[in-house]
Amino acid sequence: MQENIKEILLTKEQIAAGVARLGKEITADYQGKVPLLVAVLKGAVVFLSDLIRAIEIPVRFDFMAVSSYGPSTQTTGQVQILKDLGQSIEGQHVIVVEDIIDTGLTLRYILENLSSRKPASLKICTFLDKPSRREVDLKPDYNGYDIPDEFVVGYGLDFAEQYRNLPYIGVLKPEKYK
Ligand code: IMP
Ligand code: MG
Image (tube, rainbow, N blue to C red):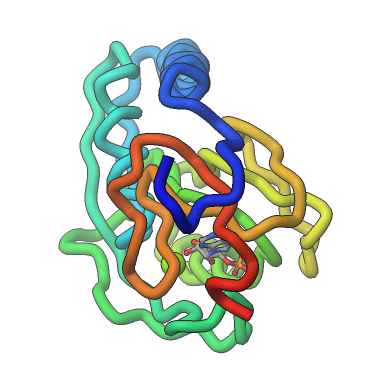
């Protein structure tokens, strides 16, 4: 285990089981459709790459980047689109793929923005959810795991751009960011 990690919350095996379950749910729900998965850079990239291989129907994917915390661990609520989709989503079945929903402020902004572009449907798939931290009324349609209110890293999630490549979800030692 990495020295700055206090505890492992989800092992590689638990991650794989969660992704497999989500892949099955999406496969069942989108029969006969070709959903467009919109992953939010950069954290959701690792999850997206596993998720698409757990879905057994044709899918397409694209990326969006929004501004987030910077080097801090608290959300500001000020969201800005840094990179937009490469295509129109009008009439498409869109699934927004997120690494984690914390306050929900980032995702609320993304959903409002995307719904104004008239997709045929718009759903949320997150790998992790911290429901106790929610500041806006928002529930994921697909959720890997609920986790407690702790700052986690790994499996795409970062602290100051580090730790994204850890193969597990770990709790960062609080002295690393306090
Ligand atoms: P929200 O707007 O507060 O829901 O924040 C969502 C974004 O904050 C996520 O996409 C992550 O990039 C980041 N984030 C929230 N909680 C954590 C965490 O525990 N570890 C790493 N990044 C996090
Ligand atoms: Mg981040």
